[in-house]
Amino acid sequence: MDINEIKDIVEENYNINIRSILKVKNSYNVKADEGEYCIKNIKYDFPHFNFIISAIEHLQKRQFKTIPEILPNKVGNKYIKIDEDYAYITKWIPSRVSNFNNPVELQAIAIKLAELHKCSKGFNLNREMRPRIGWYSWVNVFNTRCNEILDFRKRIYQKAYKSDFDRIYLEHIDNEIDRGQRAVKGLERNGYFVLMDREVKKRGFCHHDFAHHNILIDKDYQINIIDFDYCILDTHIHDLSSLLIRVMKDGKWNNKTGDLIINNYREVLEVTDDELKIMKYFIMFPQSFWQIGLQYYWEQQPWNEEVFINKIIRYLEDVEDIDKVFEDVINFLSQANACKKEVKSLMTSMQEEEKK
Image 1 (cartoon, rainbow, N blue to C red):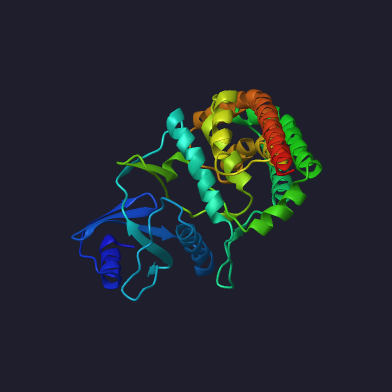
Image 2 (cartoon, one colour):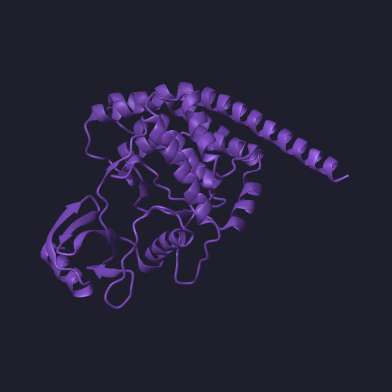
C-alpha cells in the first residue's frame, strides 16, 4: 500500500498529525506533531493476530517490563486494518539492538527472558483466538524434518550436475539424520510428553523469535522486547534452548556462556534436571542443517553458492562442539540443583528441630 494511503488511514483512526512515515523492515516509523510512533503490520488472519496482541496485553497486565504499550484508536480498539492486514500502533523506542557478545548484556537478557516466561503463565484463550501451539509437537516436527532432509537427498540424486554445496550436504546427510533420530528418541525416553502435561497446566507461552534485533536497549539501558509475531503456546525451555543456540552458534559454543545464560535465567525461573535433559535433545536436533537444505532445495533462495557453502561449513564446525559443551553444562547445573535440594532439605530439618 502507498505511504500516503497509510498516512490517511492512521490519521483517520488516531489523533495523530503525521509529518513523515518511513518503512523499517516489517514496521513503519511515524514522526508526528504528537511524538514518534511505530506501526506494526502483521500479515495474519484476525484470530491469529488477536492471539498476538492478547499475549502482549497479558504480559503488561502481569507487570512485565518492558514491551511497548499498544495504543487505542479513537473508538478504543487496539488495532486497525491496513489493506488486507491488521496493525497496531505503539510509541517508537529510541534504542539500539542488543549485543549477545557482551556478557553483562547477555546476563540481563537471560533474566529478562525468564521474567517474560514467568509473566506469561495463566494466559487465557478464547474462541476468537487461533494461536500457534507447540505443546507435544516436537517429536512430530523433528520426524517430519528428518523426512524432509531425506527428500533433499532425493533431489540431489536426481541432478545430472551436482554443485559443490550438493556434494558437501550429501556427504553429511546420514550423520545428521542419525542426530535427528537420536534427538527424537532422547525426547521420548526422557519424559518429554510428561513434561508437556505439566507445561499445559501452566498456560504459558514463548516469544519464539528472541533474537538480538528483537531485544532493544534504550537510552536508560532498559531492555525492551518487541515483535511477538511468532509467539507460540509452548514450554519455556523452547525459548531458552533457542537463546543458547543463537548466542553460541558460529564457533562460540563454550561452557562459560552456557552457564551464564542458564544460571541467570534460573535467578527468576527454575530449570529442573528433567527440563535440562529435554533441552539437550532440542539442541541436538540438526535444525540448522534442515533449514539450510530447505533454503537451497525447496525455497531456492537467490543467494550465491558461496553463501550456502559458508552456512553449512559453519554449522558442521559447530556440531563438533555442541554435544560436549551442553553435556558439561547439564552436569554442572544438575550438581548445582542437587546442592540446592540438599541445602533446602537441611534448612527444613533445622526448622523442624527448632520447633521441637
